[in-house]
Image (cartoon, rainbow, N blue to C red; front, side):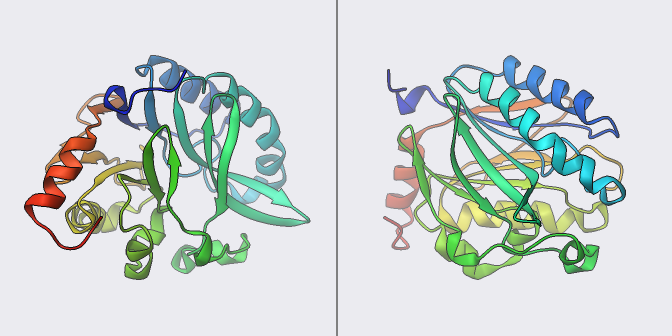
Length: 245
């Protein structure tokens, strides 16, 4: 049965990534199970393993088991996260959209964070693959962490109902994360669901911003939830018509 869009909820998860990948997976699964039915759920970037460059072989080997477990809890929910995967001897940071037991969309991170030496470990994806997808009547765009800084990618996602931002964003640039995610919602007149890691070097910021730019922050909640309203998007785009359909 197809979900009614009006019943959907948006959810940004707060998650601490430890050195134990399986512990991280169990934490993620528990949080997902606690979310409401018909939720669009966003987890922090590489939340299952972190950027564990010293153990990259173990990181990539963990991928198949993790995906099978996440698929099991994805029925009636839309789960979005990034995961490190090796293909043809090359390693990528893939965003995955998982729904009703299947990976329904994926792409590799197109803008690697050279300041953090990501380019030394990952193969870069292509910006042309940054696009809007539609799941359960919701038009979804995805920007992976550093991709948030590129204005040409904002334009590619114009018309999205929800833009999600799974991140591992440095605490020294916390204000940038706050300002950019809010500006993205205001500029594209859509919801933005941002999920940053709880790890010490990250901002620990989880936010859902509505089409008017109002920011809801995580506080002490491991799962920040907000009801999704297609009408709120339409009202904002009619009220302040800047040409977004």
